[in-house]
Amino acid sequence: MSKALEGIRILDFTHVQSGPTCTQLLAWFGADVIKVERAGEGDATRAQLRDIPGVDSLYFTMLNHNKRSITLDAKRPAGKEVLETLIRDCDVLVENFAPGALDRMGFSWERIQALNPRMVVASVKGFGPGPYEHCKVYENVAQCTGGAASTTGFSDGPPVVTGAQIGDSGSGLHLALGIVTALFQRTTSGRGQRVQTAMQDAVLNLCRVKLRDQQRLERTGVMEEYPQFGMGEEFGSAVPRAGNASGGGQPGSILRCKGWETDPNAYIYFIAQAAVWPAICQVIGHEGWITHPDFATPRARLPHLIDVFSRIEEWTRLHTKFEVMAILNQHDIPCGPILSMKEIADDPSLRATGAIVEVAHPERGSYLTVGNPIKLSDSPTDVRRSPLLGEHTEEVLGQLGYSAEQIAALRAERAI
Ligand code: COA
Image 1: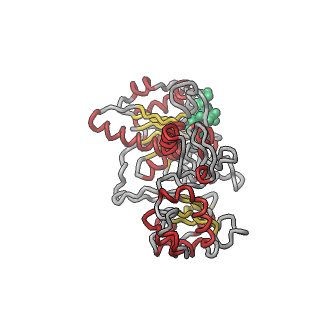
Image 2: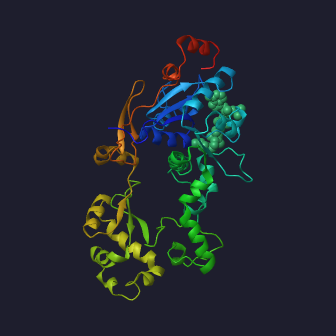
Image 3: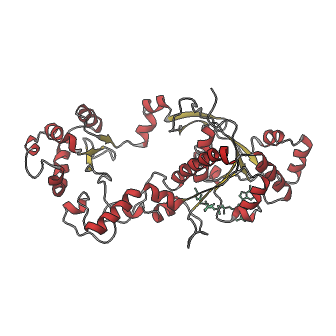
C-alpha cells in the first residue's frame, strides 16, 4: 500500500526532541527523511540517558524511527556543497537549532530560496520575535513561559511541570501540521514558504482553556468550578492552580481506590457529569442527593464539590480502580483509572492497536516505543528502527549522484 507522503523528501536537520518528533511523524506517513548529523557525536540524545553503554539511547531511538542518517559537517566547505545539493533535492528542510545557527552556517532563508524556491523551511524556536527571541529553550522553559506551569499543581504548592512533553513534542506536532499545510499550498502556488513554531506559543495553544479562565476571572472575580471556591479561598488577579479539578464544564477529581495506601497509582479520575448525576447517586448509595436542593442541579452542587467528591471517594475506596471503571461504565459515568507506565507498557490492547510497538534494534535488541497515534486508513504506519549514526551516508550520497571516489574524498576531508 502506498504512503500518504511518498515522494516527499525531508532534509532533517533536527536534534533533541521537538524537531525529531515532527520529522518522525512525517517519516511515518511515508516521507523519505534524511537526518543530517555531525560525524562522531551526532544528535546529542544518542548519548543522553543511556541504559546500555555505547548504544544509542532510548531517548534517541524512540524519536527517530523510519529515518535515514547521514553524517555531514556543514561548516566545512565540502560539507556545505553537499548540503546545497541536498537542499536542491529535498522538498522540506526542518531544523530546531538555536536561533541564528542556520544563518551562521550560511543558509539563510534567502539563500535556501535561491537554491530551491520550492523548498519549505520549517523551524522550531523557543520564542517568537520579541525580547526572548535569541534564547535557547528546553521543554520545561516552554512549559513555564507558555502558561502551563503556573496553572498546574495545587494552590498551596509551587508551580508544577507536567510529564507530557507539551513543549517539545507539542511543538513538533504543530510544526508537522504547518509543513503538510505548506506542501499543500505549494501544489497551487508552486512556491515553498517558511513554517515557524515557537515553543512558548505551542504550549500556550495547548493551555488556551486557562486563558479563557483568566478572562472569566477578570470579569467575575470568581471561578466557581475551581476547588478554591468550595474552600472559601480568595481569588487573586491570575488564574490559580486548580489541582486535579476538571478543565472543562463538568466537575472532576482524582479519587483514591482500594490499595491506595501501598500503590501510588491506585486512583481514578471521576467526572461528575450532570447528565448522569442520578446514576452517580445510585451507584454510591446516596439517592437522597438526586432531589436534595443543595445537590440536585449542577449550579447547586458547585459550592459543595468537596463534599460531593469525598462522599464518592468513600465508595471508590471499596473497589480497585479497574472495578470502579467497570461499574461506572455500566452507567455511562465518565471516568479513567490512573495508569502507571508499567501498566501501559504491559497492556495487550495497546499492543494490539499499535499504540505500543516492539521494535528490534541491531545493537540494543528489542525495545518498546510509542507507535503513530494518528491512523490513516490508506497509509498505515510501519514502525522501523532508528538509524545508526551515518548508516546511510553512502547510500544517500550515491542517490544524489556522488561517485565512490567523490565520497571517499569527502570522507578524507572530514566533510562527512
Ligand atoms: N555540522 C556543523 N555544525 C553543526 C551541525 C552539523 N551537522 N549540526 C549542528 N551544528 C552546530 C550548529 O550550527 C551550532 O553552531 P553555532 O553555535 O556555531 O551556530 C552548534 O552545532 C550547536 O547548535 P545548537 O542548536 O546551539 O545546540 P545546543 O546544544 O547548544 O542547544 C538547544 C540546544 C535545544 C537549546 C537549541 O538548539 C535550541 O534552543 N533550539 C530551539 C528550541 C528547541 O527546539 N528546543 C527544544 C529542544 S528538544
